[in-house]
Image 1 (tube, helix red, strand yellow):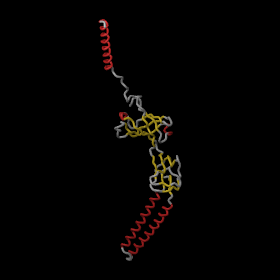
Image 2 (cartoon, rainbow, N blue to C red):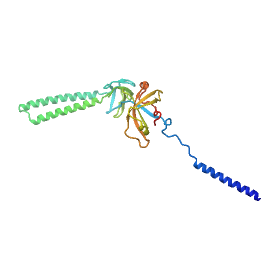
Image 3 (spheres, one colour):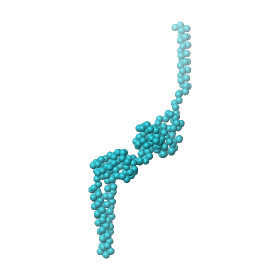
Image 4 (cartoon, rainbow, N blue to C red):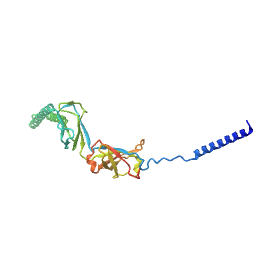
Amino acid sequence: MKPSSFSALRIGVLLACALGGALEAGAQTAPAPRSAPAGAPGNLAPVRFLVVAAQESVLSASAPGRFAKVPVSLGDTVRAGQVLAAYECDEIQARRAAARAEHEAAKVQYVGKLKLQGLQSAAEIEVELAAANVNKAQSQVRIFDAQIAQCNFVAPFAGKVARVHVKVGQGVNPGAPVVELVGNGPLKARMNVPSQWLAWLKTGQRLDATVDETGAAVVLKVTRVSGRVDAVSQTIEIEAELAGDAAGQVLPGMSGQVRAPVGRG
């Protein structure tokens, strides 16, 4: 290789090394692009909520039996104390009648023993035994009264029938569901919101929301805030009442989305 060619090659290698070092230094000193804060308005994901009834109950069987009547159907409006279903209880009613007769007979015997004791014709032990028989017969009547009370499934509050699980003639075992009932009171929305919302979220706060099933816009008024933040998800459970013109079209079980007000999050 000629001396001139060697010199040119050496100069080219030095320039390439210098250029590579400059590029590496620039890459190390250039600031990385900053992502938007997680809590910035407009970047928060919507919070899901579930609509629930203020009162709801599942009436279940506490004793085995066979249904003689089921006078309600799906969607019926019922009043508090109304019979929703009833067992066949003829046998229990007959036993209660017999127990009441025994109770009356025991009372007659007790009164007779008291009179005889006054005439010194009955011992005190006889009077005490007669009184014990009265109490025993009365206890039997109360047992049958309690069993007959279990024959009728009564609405604990006014509302609507959400589901009927049984039919006339069907037999059930203890614990089997019979009728599901939802109350007529105002509906509630339950949701888990980010714990950062506690900086501004208070009872009475109004939130704009949308119901998925109908697409209707509703207003949620916060009524309750849990006293504990979930340590894993960093969320807190809240309850809210539904307000607005579209609230009457919302049913329990529907769901939707709510976002934090602009500028809060």
